[in-house]
Length: 292
Image (cartoon, rainbow, N blue to C red; front, side, top):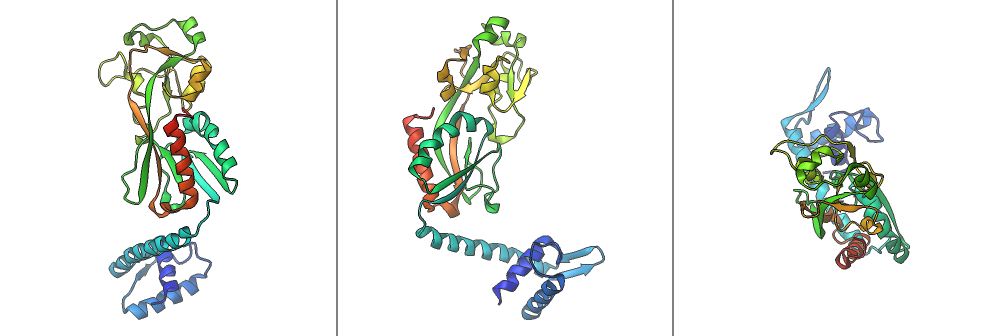
């Protein structure tokens, strides 16, 4: 069986179209390749109708098989090329929005100086990137996705607590109990789903179960909002920016939840020299607490 014809079928089957399937071929050329494949297999793969086309049951089975075959081929290709790879090239990384300014920018300077052949592209992204579509090579996440095709390596545990600027507390007073929070401006992290599940834990303090304070401000970078005097925010006690002493603890006896930080990357890059070089560096930094 001709592998090129299978690839053409794979693209056309995914798109359910001969005209908008991302191939640099005319619809008539694609049709000829599909006809050849149908002749070889002795089955019909597509049903054409006025509104477009659909796959036959045999076509659906072949499409599923193509998914498996091409995924395995890509894995073999990656394994062969990664064996000889040098720690060089581009690393595409995603990280929660608040981590770029507080952690990553301070972390990468030494790494890039020590690895001049590596380049980094960092994007703020509070969800799981689609590794299968190469949206990222590595992601910093507060959990490991339920996906057998990815690897998650724990970096460290962050412990959340409440902080505010001295200027804010001077103007609005310092809360003595969690019940006092109802009279204060609380800063909430932006809406999201699982990736930062516990980040808004403080919005229910001092209220009956299931109730939430109305946020005074909703923003993704809580530190800078608190530093600007907008109100009380929850931050990791290990946050390196707290060393500036521009924020002070609020209700320090109240301990928030902990958030684990992981490096997550696709299994196909498990032997990548550039990925493993970066992982070794970031885990070493996390272990030694140089960047907290």
